[in-house]
Length: 386
Image 1 (tube, rainbow, N blue to C red):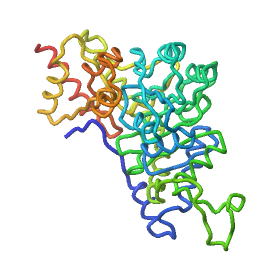
Image 2 (image 1 turned 135 degrees about the vertical axis):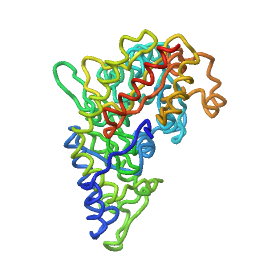
Image 3 (image 1 turned 90 degrees about the vertical axis):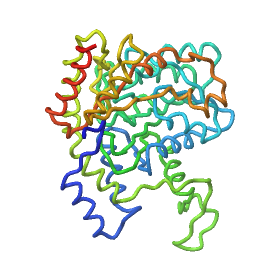
Image 4 (image 1 turned 90 degrees about the horizontal axis):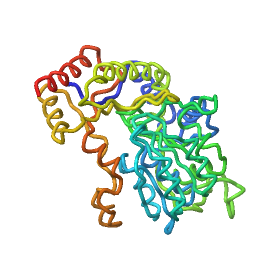
């Protein structure tokens, strides 16, 4: 069987977890701090707050920014549900701006037009789709002009970089955002089983994130209204149990050591696919913008012209035990959003055109050359027999 994605776990990962099982802490211990420091070292961001999963990371990020009822949040329609749901969790209202067909990320011109035409977002959440960085510098410039906050959804993009004005930036560095989030789900670049993190360069935001991650509890003597002893704590904010365990962080630390190898292998497979498909007029290969070095999370092709092609290719590959996926159904089509906001038909035409034609092929570090060749041959044979 060839899945569309899967984790890579080796003996060093297993030993890292076993070492924690023999230690004094299974949660809230030194491995969490160590993992956060490594994320800062990788990205260049000043602060990292690790948490239970990527959805929790997005929720915490919105909470830290004070998103509330009456606030408007905007994200891409081509993303996982959590990129929008986090706004709803905080009582805000959600809207979507179409994607740029050249990058499959949220359209910068769409954001500018939205704001110029009276839209007043409190926060915009650009998604680094498939590992390709959104145009964060341009969005950051618009944020300074129109007064909104930026949360980079880098759930797909740990290890991805982009270049701006001669400088190279890691996704998640927060040079062009207020906050950024990562996900460590098993099909992401590295895994902690489940897990997430929020990055920021703002100390006050980092402190709020830590507070909200742990039930809103604090022992900070400068905040306590009284202090009965070293055991004493108070809850000043309504928070959540969004903590991550030392077991997960030990796995994450071990996985981070392999990140450069994971990225190299993912890019090799992407090159192999794109070289095989780029001359087929029926297939559009995914973008790789010149100023970026994506650590690709997924490899999504688009099938031109034939509405049934995607489903037929999906079913054909399935008969060969090759499993693919669709990333994603436009979020505003989901019944929750459609019924709440009554979005118009064809609200985001580029996103809808993309959805009707897209299919994510297998991509993960352990995917062998022979398996990659089987995927390629199977698709090429399908088109040659049409």
